[in-house]
Length: 348
Image (cartoon, rainbow, N blue to C red):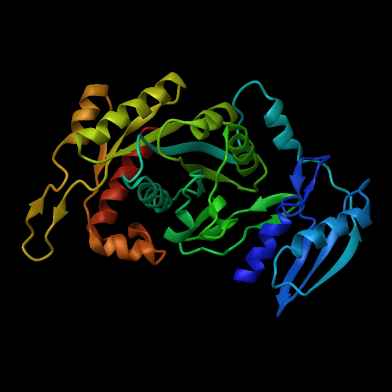
């Protein structure tokens, strides 16, 4: 699997300049296989491309992997055009709707380390348990963690009709840049690259019919959030925080950013709110008390939920099973389901 992923990553570096996309995204690579030190696949040649030159570029790129001894490529003629929807979105003056998606819900935080991705993952599953069709896009391009939380690491999305097909787990359609990279590959992208990546994930993906697409943003207030607001119509934002005052300072900035972008902020989720001893039942507020509620009152936002700290949830998350998927009767799962109900009530 590691070798296959290495080859996949190398092929992603070979671009067709005319349409400004790589050969994997365009669906030009088929039947990729690795047997020992031999790499084999079919390569479709776009109309107008020099087949010999493209094959040469592909072979040179694959041979950058020192373990590759032989590259067996089957050449096929093919005609390809730039995906129209992505191009239209790039030229559009305002945010666009994603085909088949009714509502877009973003999960954000003012700073890292508050469990934003954990909230996004469990919220997506909790909404689906309410009978909704849900997708989850891991928009945290700098630190994607959704693949690990759902146990889909190494599962590369298929390409159909020049578009990506999300991976499915627990009834959720999932897509993350983490599925395109190995665990040690850093993502060092400036704003324009983030914008193009978001454009592809939103518009060059077959999301199908969804009631909600949940987007897990990177922490803070930066290029990703601005790009998303320019590209798509965001129907609501959920802000994640922890009880400490220092975390709340950053949440204020994140909330004000969405207000300025005219995105409705649905409320605040206070994560790591307390620890309840499994033996005696005593509740300990490790990081203080009432921070989320205080912020909510200050900014006129409802407190959507208080998520407790639970070692079992952490362990299961590391094994690819979010709390809500683990058991709907678990205290943490019940709290996430309450959050989902409150979010849904904002739209219904």
